[in-house]
Image (tube, rainbow, N blue to C red; front, side):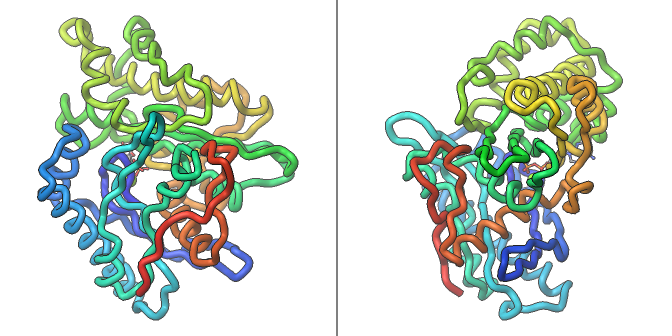
Length: 363
Ligand SMILES: Nc1ncnc2c1ncn2[C@@H]1O[C@H](COP(=O)(O)OP(=O)(O)O)[C@@H](O)[C@H]1O
Ligand SMILES: [Mg+2]
């Protein structure tokens, strides 16, 4: 798995029993080499590429994913025959789920992953859901349901990656699981931290905590049609990016201290997530956070404050460390695919029906 943050490739080794019981064995993040990081970043930010460059980045990424998997397996003293399948999400370079020709484009050549690892590889998970009329996203809610839902309480799972998405897991099995992208997670926080401090992210949210939220800017930031859009909905860096941020901050950057802007951007992430939880989740729901945002203490404490007496914890409390939920989800989705089981939730993506996701590249 490699999400919108471009912080690296998460490789999770998981075990799934015949009945689908999930266990994380081990996991590791492999950072992108500088050159590939820059090429991916440029591709995603500029949204243009020469076809030759695009083809080469697809191969370079496929190679890196394959080699990263081999490294993790070697460290575990495992080889290809020990592994049933790889689920590779790839890197989203464009997500455009509405309009006349909806699509979502992931790269990271899966033929090459199968070739390098000698392991059957499943990729292109989002395509079939879109073909069936869905957004192709988010796809993790089915995994959240399988692993985290309980008849004992209503739960909300919040995945704070570059973009944030929430999954609402009702205690009652009669009620549908729902979920959607709430908007920015870390993407704007990372952008501003890189620009101002030349660091990849605001460690623990300490910089944001040192600033004061500016309510006038916050209002500007919250004035975005996506936040009011009806569900199902999904988004990405095509909308919430440097340009979006620059436009919203125009006129303020000279007057306002950078730390105050970081505090304000963090408040935007916290408020948009909290507002959606308050609007869509049952009032007594417990909230469990995963994704890299779980490490941002300031963000989490703002979320807790905005959610009042709701319980806020990380998915560690449910038995899976927040760093590996998304990678685990794509292992689980691969398991669904090779067993010809459906992987999307139409109540989440808006698809016309449940479908078996992905394309299989045999070993
Ligand atoms: N210790 C930390 N403190 C604050 N933020 C963190 C920390 N560790 C990770 N993050 C944030 O999490 C992001 C990565 O989260 P991740 O779930 O991998 O997102 P994605 O799915 O988009 O790759 C980083 O870019 C960073 O913003
Ligand atoms: Mg990541």
